[in-house]
Length: 220
Length: 294
Image 1 (tube, chains in turn purple, blue):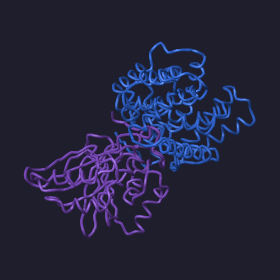
Image 2 (image 1 turned 90 degrees about the horizontal axis):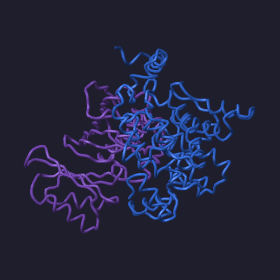
Image 3 (image 1 turned 90 degrees about the vertical axis):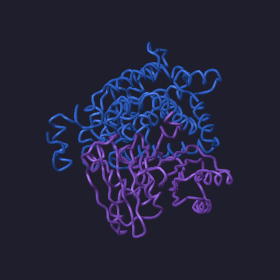
């Protein structure tokens, strides 16, 4: 079943006007911010399908930038997100794309600063729910609604075991897990949805684990 | 976990509990949360809905200028006239409109089940409240009952206009509201299911054709009609009227109708009211130019 909680139906509390074009968009932006781990200096935001066609009227642009500023769907500061981003010196460009995507409400977001960048694709699936379908070229399926840890690692044996044994030691239960790679033996991405938010100290421990290159997290 | 309305009603009636209680217990179990946590979160949603109705009744205007102010008009009319459709019904209409006007103006609302259909549940709740005088707890329960029926629709059909048309959004919201009214008025779980079925049957086939793609025209007024549909169906169910087609089959019919609905009528602003001469004119005005030059 796609919807598991009554609050998936009765909620979210959000700034209008559209659960898919505003709240879902904010959640995609916030997932990018979460995974990047800090406020970016620049953002290139590509909008597809219905997003590209109606983003101004729905405040999709404002909502995504609000998400990049780490605002929740109900944070009234979303309304002034574009001005705030400007004041904070974030360079933002929007691109309306014509090309066809699998889902009508799709956004591709590239953000970065002097120390790094990140690219993700998010889709808004209705009722304010969003999914991340691509991260730095890796395909994945991640709902922003659960805490999760994402690890980029060398595609070697033992990488998964080293991660899961650390989680087991801290008594963290895995709800959903998937691994994807672009090419055999190269870099791979591990996505682990968990039941509770993960402490910073555990993330540090995961970073030091065998074959792990980079760790990021999504908080609930 | 209940998978359909029949199971939901069966769980409630075999244990002698309300629909809302089934939903609360399931949420506690699935999410491993306490009753206080689950109840508290829903109460905060109730606070948001109450505030949105209040704000809308003070009068708001959307950024596009397409909607706003109708909730105030209806309330003014009710002060000076005895409404032909009845006070509770028109009060529900005005409060549903208020919520969706606030939503269109980028105000804070609670999606029930979506933002575009956010008016039906709170609109009816804050209207029947004046007649039934519920406790705060009963008002929170109203939202769990609505959520239980919405949960079935979302998992077996759709609550997205882009996927299933307006019948999936306002149709679902109105049905959820009807079921919740019945519980608050003291009806049985199966009467709630009948009310949901009667409401949804009368919204089948409703397309999603928003002018300029915005959640404004005709969404605000569709919530008004959804709310009145809900109040009427609740009364019918409480009177003992049943739906010849069981609720789950109505939901399934809604799903199949949505699947066969042309893309132009599923939230793409390409057909229906969006494609009327006036709809196109408004679209051009909102965006400065027409977005779709064929």
